[in-house]
Length: 177
Image (tube, rainbow, N blue to C red; front, top):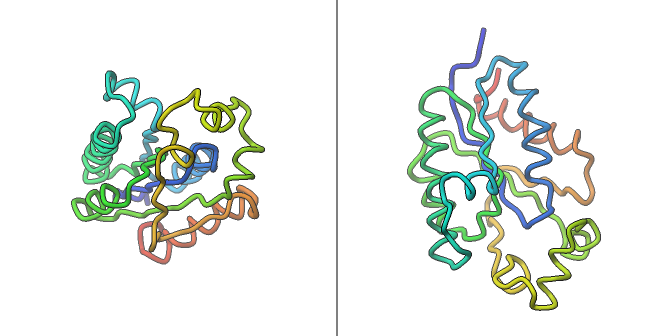
């Protein structure tokens, strides 16, 4: 029988930590289990729902609240809303958790030196050189979750291991059969 219970699978972590990679890996697995799934990618939402917003704390908070609002609408209508946005501030993540049911926070943890090595676009290098301003983790803060529901260590685990951790947690919570 199809899973009709919606929930939010909220990936947070620095740029390059593997949020979008994990989101796109786990989505078809959830679909195979009968879930309706929608991925809300941070860059896509910024382009389509938050155009014109900059990268000040207020603008970032507005963007994340918009993602949270859409994810909440989807989840209460039986959809698994997977978000993959840095969402750097824990107060806004906690605000969204408090406003929604079945919120699952997944922290894609990865050390900065590994992220810099993975960085094919050279964003970290540009941020350290001052070319990119307000870059999360370099010139702007990232507040790691203190009590994430699932922590995946993307520098140590394979994508399969990280996905298994997440799926096991969803089963334990009763969100998946």
